[in-house]
Length: 394
Image (cartoon, rainbow, N blue to C red):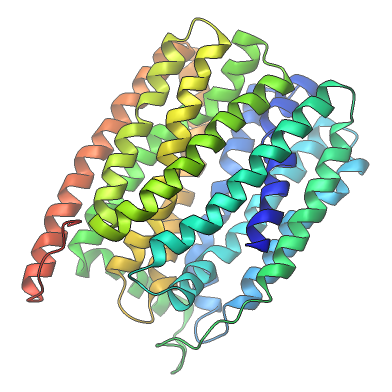
């Protein structure tokens, strides 16, 4: 809980305002905004390498050190003077943070029992989002009252570093598959890609996530540009959007945690991505900035389900001891689509206009929804072949 609270201050003080400050205060170009959107994905291109490096080792140090460095880097904000320095800082931090993802997924499997994982993870995320809401609300008003953004980022970075320390205090039991000879990086990479051949349910799930996520990233790249250029959004209104999203995210975690434990992660993901598909349409049709709160509300509700659903679907398909490897594959495809989609979003926006670009992204996202149905079909088939009763989720 302490980790969630510290991370909430970090997110509320820093990431709520990064895009708005980049575009409105630092005058970042559309191309640089594309870089900022792509940066969280670039590091995940190497997720298989990170997973290979932690194979057979304790996962906790990988999370601790990457969180400490990535989040703590925002304490350097008072030294930022130029637009290029700002872009570099914001691009570097998520790339470093991405190293922790396979290890974090493996730790979640080890510390939470399967039947309660959804609700327990939801409880931590509720704390995180409550604190994020409060931090964003206060920070937005302070920024509009004259507080330098460098000060807000410094405070957020300090709490981000503290979140790494509190996470390092948890006790992680030994898990299966932690011992044995290590494979070469090439062997590990080939075996990781082989998951798609051996596991058809996970193959369709990966395809669904890639296609839906590609469309969502196209839209997400354009959202902050559209907010500033079309609506001249203030820091306070950015905080208001964040707080609407945080409130529905909190409510969502209460619902999705229960729903996933009862119905399973695959159905959770399907419903959640259907909900988030409303966002591009709302942006395309919004006549005033206030209407964007509808998109923030649906996005917050859906993202809580996706947050829980993605990681638990990965754990559902992964064999014992291979959670980090499955997560590495999932993250690698996120890195691929997250690197490409923002770079295509900007030319698309210039070619057809932001509103039509939102409609294009909507069509792509709906194709991903269809692929999720194939994943659920194959998961049922796999469960039947194993001779188990098929749960309602699959």
